[in-house]
Length: 234
Image 1 (spheres, rainbow, N blue to C red):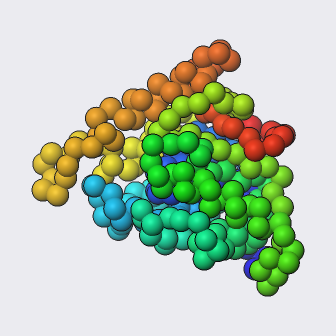
Image 2 (image 1 turned 90 degrees about the horizontal axis):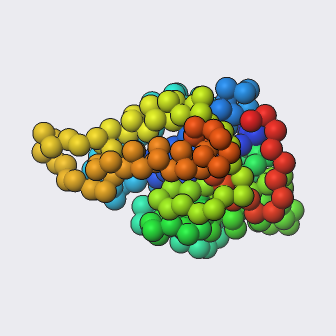
């Protein structure tokens, strides 16, 4: 397995667009600093009210190019079917051991969407299991240096903030690539209004301004670290 590219940052998300919402600016900043960043979506978001999996994958490919991702993958787990258990956890363990990241990111464990909290739990368990040399010994064990949570729908007091002022336009362009999710499309037959189509991206930008304000920067993204964290290259 160790023939795969080693990553500096590995991000897990329940659906395409989750990571872009929470840390798209940090991803763009790290990539442009020469860091290798990978993003694995757990599902194809097949339960989305708007857009189908093929559309979402095309949108994800465009967003990935804008952000500068080294790797993007999808584990094909069932949307609204994420659950604890070795079968799903092991898919994430394999990804961690394949890419040997320095830092793993996952959604914060308090969020209004159950899939986001389930993804958080799966990633946390996978990061723990990945370091156990007797767990699935056919894959070499790996211990990331740090594990961090990013925010999607909700906002909590961050332990770490990353100034993304220079990269905010890239983040918003990447999010705009998900037109099926965020753009009003009344002219489309199979479309319904959702909370995402009524100013959601404005709310994302406003949250980034709030994270930045105490630090006198225009935009920032907030994170909570599980344990101590040494940041460099940002």
